[in-house]
Image (cartoon, rainbow, N blue to C red; front, side, top):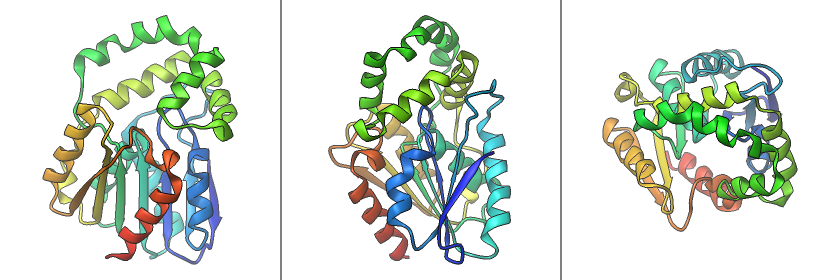
Amino acid sequence: MNYKEYGDLHKPLILFIHGGGVGGWMWDKQVQYFSDFHCVVPELIDNEATSDFTIEDSAKKLLSLIEEKAKNKRVIVVGFSLGAQIAIQMVSLKPQLINFAIINSALVTPSPIAEKCIRLLIKLTFPLIKNKSFAKLQAKTLYVDQEYFEQYYEDSSKMKVDTLVKLLKENMSFATPRDFPKAQCNILVTVGEKEKGNMKKSALHLVNSNSNCRGVVLSNIGHGVSLANPEFFNRFVEEWIKGW
């Protein structure tokens, strides 16, 4: 798995895990703000290859990366959407390795019907991915602004149909791991006020599954607070970490 490092390598480590349909670039504003931390930003998908992506495999790879890089430092994991699902899997697999986990917009209520229809729906709509007007509509739902649109469009255009199907199947079939209640780190679960009902239901389920979880509904926000309002998000994360 490719990754980039930023900041002070001697300070606590923050691992930023991006969502599906976007890349590590979605964390640019966070990397700039947290320059006094050791920031690690992986790229989950190789768009040039056919993906054998799974959430569990990605979690295991990132846990190995943390063990290599952290060297007894405090570890903070920040995940968005698909990246948040990976973060949940990580704290479930190795409950003592991570100190703080920030779970933004994680879906943990599987949708078997939607999962079964994914391949057909993707094949019908896949040609639209390279249509810039369609891409702009999709980007808007993720708060991808003009600054990052070309990067978003480039990544989307490179994605292969099988890769997209695999990503969506993993996303829609993900359920809270059995060992999540054993996670010992401080966990912050956020969901946007404007997000869909299944996202809010998922956030509530997570908070009720582990006594170390704290839940926050973010006012007037949909799916993607770190891109929608990076200044607020950065301060919010910083204050939460400092509060412990």
